[in-house]
Length: 53
Image 1 (cartoon, one colour):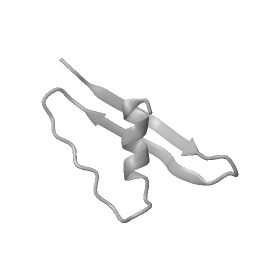
Image 2 (tube, rainbow, N blue to C red):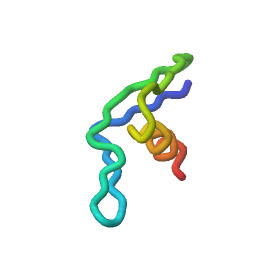
Image 3 (tube, rainbow, N blue to C red):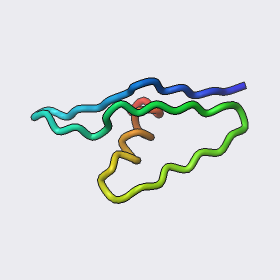
């Protein structure tokens, strides 16, 4: 079984630019997640944080 849980996760780059601010989500085993939003809203940054990159 796999599970991903994020609670109030934030990412700030050098210089103070916030890429992700207070994201919370939970993904249970066998669930499918799609992140949708405009360009520059932090979708790829969130996925990279989950992947550990």
